[in-house]
Image (tube, rainbow, N blue to C red; front, side, top):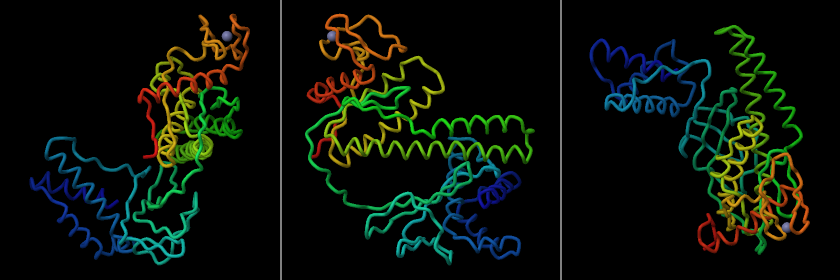
Length: 349
Ligand SMILES: [Zn+2]
């Protein structure tokens, strides 16, 4: 709101008087608004996010005057997303409770995980998503516990029906609720399409759909965190297939899109967790295709259609589950990549 009002003020000044107004002037304006009855409520909230809104607006105007971007736009009031950062002086942290500047009571929060013992956050970010939920994230410094020394390696294959397959033969599938959550999204999408444009009902349906999306994303992220933590716990070297290679697969099914999004997030988590705990993550090129190569004798088949779930070698008679074999081949290619110094290893120094 402050951002829009300041923008309106600056806009008028620019159009009518050809004036350009800077941050200090809008800041002084904010002080004046607070003294009026109509905007007295601004005194109730912390001045930190208000000033930050004005500063963002200033950046927008600076860029505009330097002809880098278009004229700053009015913010959409219906779906307000974005975040505000509070530095150390703008909040208090006591007994695990967070109080933001100008608030008399600590925030009511549901924590996603426990803060390390004795840790004090250095910055607090409050954000809001399209589903209208508010999030608080805390930045803390901590010394990571060292993971037990391991000298084992694992290959991980990402699939469509099975989320991941480990070279040990273990398959990790989508959590059971994923199917139900997806059905909910389809239902919400249908609801939304039936509502009249620009109606209040439509806006409500939009929030409901955003909430359904947020829920599925939250659950998947949680699940991926558990998987990746387990992987860095159990092995020193983790070999995965290279992401760029997957992008070349011309498969545009929705299930594939979701699997790819999960895979990208999984890779990102593995990368930073490997770095934290001194594990080695190796990205393996998928050429020659691991799905066509026999993991026992190395013979390559001409073709291995997606529908064929079991690999059968014509040369040595070896049979194996398709995904497990893939994971094994990825693992086998891993050390070669590490030896060439070509991987994305994070060896402890
Ligand atoms: Zn064979």
